[in-house]
Image (cartoon, rainbow, N blue to C red):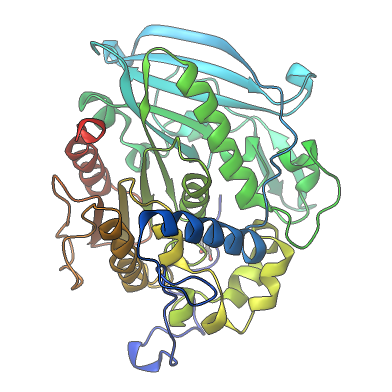
Length: 417
Ligand code: GCU
């Protein structure tokens, strides 16, 4: 997968706090008709309103009526994977009656082998196929979508062997397992190829062939896939169905955000640099703009999103509202100081703003209101919103995972509190 040129700092956009145009942040606790939200019951109403705003203006609606038949087939299992550290399972999730001939998603699951009972699992989509997450010869490579030169024709190919383990740093599988968590992952291209005009190969086609202005795009399809993985995970007795966390980086952070917003079975969200169209604030007018997202990745969103091009300050659904949809479930927001394109400060301000909803619901949100120093992680037992801005660029690192796993540890007794 290829980042758009210079994802850290695309030239020609504003990166200067002093040049941010005047803007007002949307208030998660005021209804569209101006009524202040003062009770948990009112939040329930406001929450539905906010989901509707995202459906209408950003991601489009995910069809609910048509229920896809889902059949899971364990195609491989090894009780002594990774030198005895893990139980590995590879599971095909079929989305149609056509079996292998129809759309399906291949889930790779690692569970710590010494677990005494059902384990909490972190679920996330990967960019390059399951074989990239760790150098394990037992992983069956996922067919990946490429547009190879010179014809730039979309092709579904077996990935090169050298991609095995190429994203180990981003996934930290051993660290996750050693700390007692499981990992479930699937290739996002199993749901929709990340290319313009590739919806013919999308799971969206299971439901419709034409898309209205408020119908879902690729981010909706990726989020939908995360929920299908949850369907499977909660049926697996070795998994603690109440402790499924979802993670994602960048565009897959946006997908993770949207999945968690719609699917309350997702207990925790760990979102890395989801940026604009994710947890950052489009209204701030710094870093990536709506115009850039719409121009480069129109297929990620619903068609209505285009109407906000050049009107970033007016967008009716922004990152702080997205984060508020997690409340009161634990959420960790991870930024990178070098990732100006995502606007780390916007991600932080969203976390502060959404924390007001946590407070309304009797939970403690983020413990600070001033942006913490680089590499100082803010999370603690009892606090349901965590945040850090680490040094370095747009990426997922061991530091991010150390914080995520500690945050999960801090919420281990969440159900019992
Ligand atoms: C591009 C895009 C971002 C996105 C990123 C990624 O840089 O502009 O919005 O988050 O790709 O997915 O890595």
